[in-house]
Image (cartoon, rainbow, N blue to C red):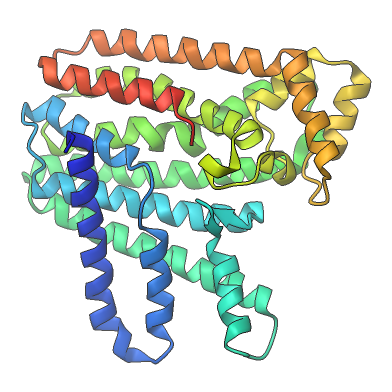
Length: 360
């Protein structure tokens, strides 16, 4: 079993144990509680576990140990729970029907309402229950991070907790800016959209997907301030490459691989760097039509194909791929400045390549 696979299995066991313990404690409160918590179990099973891997790699870079200590496993599981909570809430905001090939959480709860023959609006129930589940996942994430911090020195714990709080705040602000961008575009000049999209990509995803897990692991491992800054120089551009790849997959990804319909980001109206690049390169007429179609829940297959062709033929896709490549090169250049043992360096290089070139 590879190191990343071993860590993924350990993190999954931590998540399963957390949910099982909460089911034991909270289940007896009411007969409808188990079904609620079972959705948490379903939603936290599987996934790429990239954030967990980066957390462990950050710890290793600071401590010099490749062992998956209890602190690392707990912190990695905490970050994965935070990620799960963000996805639950993000699917509500984006009105997404699917996640990883299965119904999104609010859709699953709406189906549960319908199957139970309950009164009232099933859609409202689904949204409400999903919001609550996302909040509960955040609570569990906090609990696990507190447990992780209890296993390291007080100094390391204080620094890690402060970074964890900063990460959560920035992701929330990034989500809000993303929400604003979907409605503010009529008053935003085309030549200003790329800079705004990059800000959102960094604050909403790039930092918490790569940079912050690396830094949190490093802080738990006792990293110096200079090492933390070196890790950031590697993690931030790689995080941007991660999000840009996500943007490409959101428009051109294979549903059988990504678990979401091809062109889903177009239906959701995502104003990404790739969209901004395309609009800078096309005619005013095509840009206006793209604006009109983005976010239309009733997009036909023909509409999606036209938008995909426009993004490709304009050079918007190529510009995005070039930015992914340049961000990856910047990240690897930053990695070379960090003093690491050969095993840790090779692991981070492999993670970087997998992050930038992933297919789901």
